[in-house]
Image 1 (cartoon, rainbow, N blue to C red):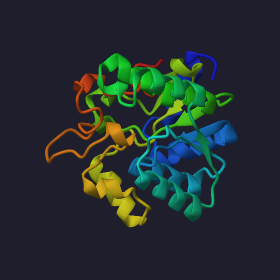
Image 2 (image 1 turned 90 degrees about the vertical axis):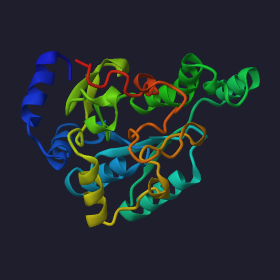
Image 3 (image 1 turned 120 degrees about the vertical axis):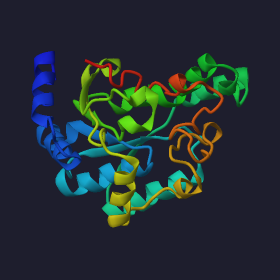
Image 4 (image 1 turned 180 degrees about the vertical axis):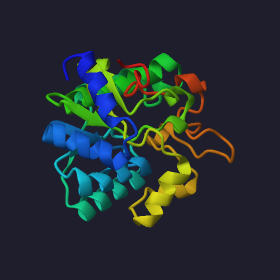
Length: 241
């Protein structure tokens, strides 16, 4: 999409759309030039399940940071087998990771927000830029209810951080209850960590269970303030125009 007039038109067409309708629209408009970005939490598995029925041409990719918990790989394989899809995996650049660990150790991300963002940039942002190269749109499992940093996310946005491509968030208005109702009804493969108190799952060293009553993303980078808890993949969520 080349200009804000096109973005406004997309928002008009998707106003009031269900998640399935948003995926179908994206698939019909962009086909294989659009892809679902999946970290294989429950929301992302829902998107893959919906797409299998209403937008089968959409591609699926994941960012393998090298520090994912084994439970995440189990879900990835279960999804691959169930839907008979190819999951495109993007790793960080080996030389850059090696240099980071040699120079700053294996837990530099705990030293400061800047150090943590450096690690995220290496392990996530650079691979994401390669994953989105040549794409016209990408689809995420962002929901407004997930965190204070996502309260203003819209169904469709312009992602300036990634060349101005379209970013579609079909589950933006879903509640936690809706997510789990859908997962149960469809008997979806679900990351085992969810049942252990992990509503949001990322790299193993940066994720912990949350206590009852805590924010959904309280277990991500728990040593930081809530307003800092984004890795940069969705830095413009809610603000992209």
